[in-house]
Image (cartoon, rainbow, N blue to C red):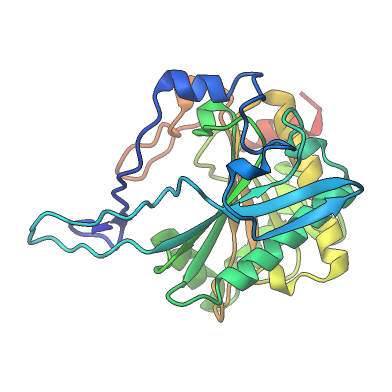
Length: 308
């Protein structure tokens, strides 16, 4: 793990073999006979950590990631620049035994169970030694960077809190919470997509990516542990509706759970980044921190609401 020359940013240097393009395309095809995440292929995975059963088979499975993103580099070359030993813990959360089913096609009750599993895994993993931050995300489709077609989430625990999360913690805990203010303003804006009693889904005012979508609780909830059973059901409902809206315009997207570290004042939220056109893969981000999008968030919200 190498530190940037100037900023408090780190780069993970991995020795994990990079998949060849044809291998990725093959895993994204309809060939499910060799899929390690399918029902009946459990022996192809490490010993599972937990599972939720439904009838005669499993509904959700969790096991250590056999191909971790942050595979440790044993030796770093001698250098005057700062570097540290890479330490992380990674899990795979398979949300359906059906190779062709995607998360938005799950029933609300099934999504609530999935979110409950994520909640419990985050709670347990961040109790491990040297774990400061736990990230949960999902990549769907080739342009998101997914290497397996079968729907799944990834959990990665880090020894350091990412700089972007540190910035969000600062914004949530100094003075009034900026995210509470954002939600209160967006609740009546043309960027609103969906809402229920507990959550709001909206397109942010200044998105990093075209059709970017956020889901945030209306009250100040720091992380999944703060969510009641009723909140979890409401989150499952709006998560499903949001993913259905995204899937109407594209097949490829990433979901990122922004979960507050233990003991930090944070406003939990979910970000969804669609990749509706491969030309915009990488967010059209200029390294200085500028972003370009091809639709206004107001127009994106209209599309999601089915009004355009």
